[in-house]
Amino acid sequence: MGFETKGDDTMKVRPTIVAVLMAAVLAWVQHADAADIKVLTAGAFKQVVVGMAGEFEKATGHKLVVENDTVGALAKRIDTGEAFDVTFLAPAAIDDLIRKGKLDDGSRVDLARVGIGVMVKEGAPKPDIGSVEAFKRALLDAKSVAYINPASGGSSGIYLVKLFDQLGIADQIKPKAKLKNGGYVAELITGGEAELGIHQISEIVPVKVVTLIGPLPKEVQNYTTYSAGISASAKEGEGAKALVKFLAGPRTGEFLKAKGMEPAGS
Image (cartoon, rainbow, N blue to C red; front, side):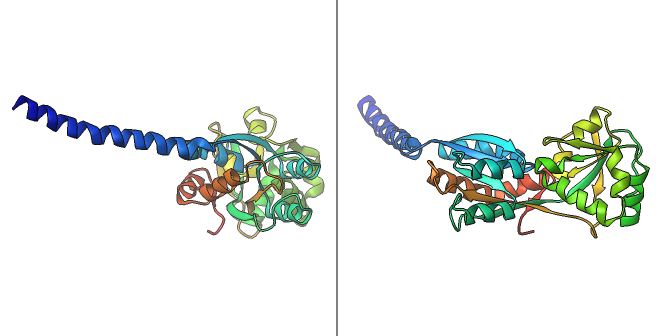
């Protein structure tokens, strides 16, 4: 009787051992080609890449090496020959780099978009920005207005300079403008350097000590779209493709909404 029990236990244990060994082999095969993937990402999309990196790395074994800068600065770096595997930039920048042969033709994938919002320091009065005229009044009434320096290549700053001109208030805004050379415009608000801040919504939401008043009026709203492009000379091209496919998936869509962004096709 004892012998039969021992035999039964042995039969039960063997499949378990086999299953564990098979899982280990499959994991080794899956991660055998794991590599470091160099990512160049602009502006607001950095938080998406960083936020989803853990899941991607766990699923593939690849490791992401992420560098962030403005769209303009990254486009220049790529144009002058910097080595990388995948980049996330504005569609126009991606298309231009494809034309120049810096990115693989056909590798562009539109992933996300984000609108521009207005912020004040937490606890400060919130001006009305519900219409174009109200927004214009809020800008003129503010003692100082912070936004990304357009000279640094930031897409929201470039758009705002044109918008101020269209609204006929460029001359009034210029002397009280507080410009940020990349990073969070919110830092100028939290530091007391500016009263009103304008930046992409996804760059406002993560900062706890500022209040997002709301988006620009729809008549003057501008969306920045972030698209992927794979280097024409990518060292880890397959890993780069896997990353783009992963970021185009439903899990990333949920993350985008939580961060003030939305899937590009919305």
